[in-house]
Length: 229
Image 1 (cartoon, rainbow, N blue to C red):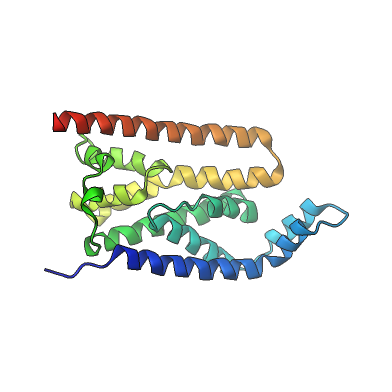
Image 2: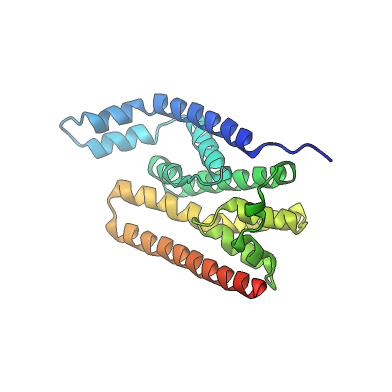
């Protein structure tokens, strides 16, 4: 029997890498932080916009790396970095950064799942069990990936456990990761622009996704009760 990798060790490595990337980003974004902490007279918004959108390509890589790592670590949210991507690079480039980071994070998880030793409680998770017993599991898992409050690792584990091929898993990840990537990137840009109408519309879209999560949890709970009855 092959020795499994320790989940805690992998999470620890991920957190160390994330801290390093945050430090590098802080170094590069120090001028913007100084303006926010010590505002001077004049149009601060225009100064920030010029500074934020003149960053080098390496900052895109740092930000994408943070989105990828926080996506891959269970229990952590990458939403703040996804919003930052939209704020710093505009809505469309922000979407691309978020989308690529989220896709890479899920791809890494799928590649490591068979090498990680998961706990018994994780394997018996009611959402995971519910997704596995759908008539069209690929559709259910794609919807699961769209919802920010459902851990991506649950969906990825389900797909790998069902022995889905990489060709089947990738379209689910690509489609499933787009809605939140879009909402957070456009949200970041809307916050910077002070566009309250757009912010409200995006918050409504996010609320709908969270409501979908609530429905899935309820259905999973009913499925679990029927199974144990």
